[in-house]
Image 1 (cartoon, rainbow, N blue to C red):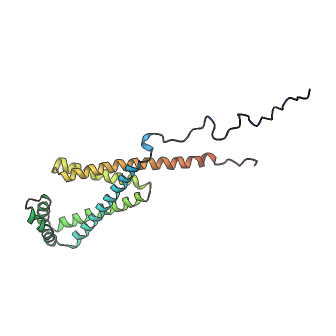
Image 2 (cartoon, rainbow, N blue to C red; image 1 turned 135 degrees about the horizontal axis):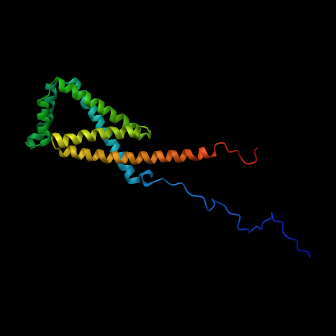
Image 3 (cartoon, rainbow, N blue to C red; image 1 turned 60 degrees about the vertical axis):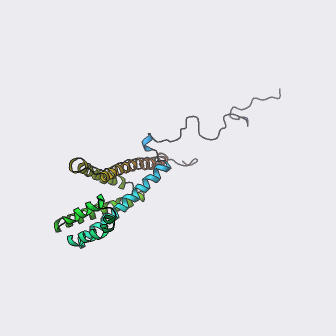
Length: 212
């Protein structure tokens, strides 16, 4: 007979065992939970806008702190009267203008120095942390969250124990939303770093095929 048995090591060209791509047991890496997923484009844009606004708030605080350092209480009260004169001429009951006039009329040297230190320290902290977070520095995220939580605690005390303010309430809600977005972004970036480092750790020590 001319037919010879085919060696066991040879496979036909159409053998189904030739497959490309990952095997049936391969899995695609996925985040451990929903909290570690990256922010959606809309939330990511909202997060960045919130950071920019918080940074601008820090710039205004620093500017206010500098003014308090170099202007006397009388000069500050005069400046506020000039700035609010037009608004009060149109609406004599404007709450913001009347509040500013009332506050600056009771200023003295001690309060201006304390206010300057408060504004400069808080404003500078906001500017630095916001800039670091926008540059993607992972270690700055928990610091920004801690700073915002401290602001929220102080603002809640002012709202509940001192005097209710709609503006301060809105600011507290804004800060709480920014804390949540910062935490989500921090979890996502930390998970991505961990996933990027894991393959390097698995292949470390392996030798290329053919080497002994």
